[in-house]
Image 1 (cartoon, rainbow, N blue to C red):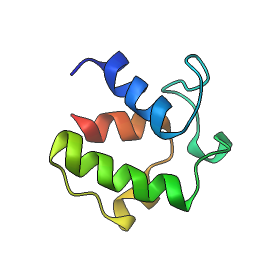
Image 2 (cartoon, rainbow, N blue to C red):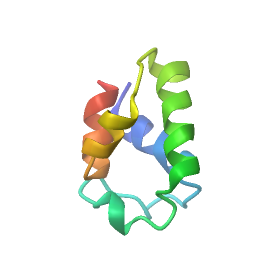
Image 3 (cartoon, rainbow, N blue to C red):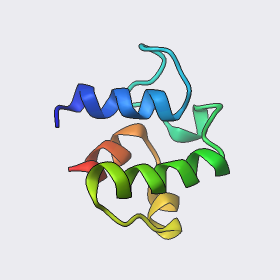
Length: 72
């Protein structure tokens, strides 16, 4: 899956418009980065990428790029 496709999945997950989410953005600066989004991210990783994501791993994510890297 291309980076742009992965980023579009995250844009949908975060309920943002195209162009509002960039790989270099800090997650703490994304208003919709909350507990519900984190739970949705866990489900998406399992459904879309067949990857298990733990709370500990989520706490280590600092930027959008960190999430994109995990998707590989």
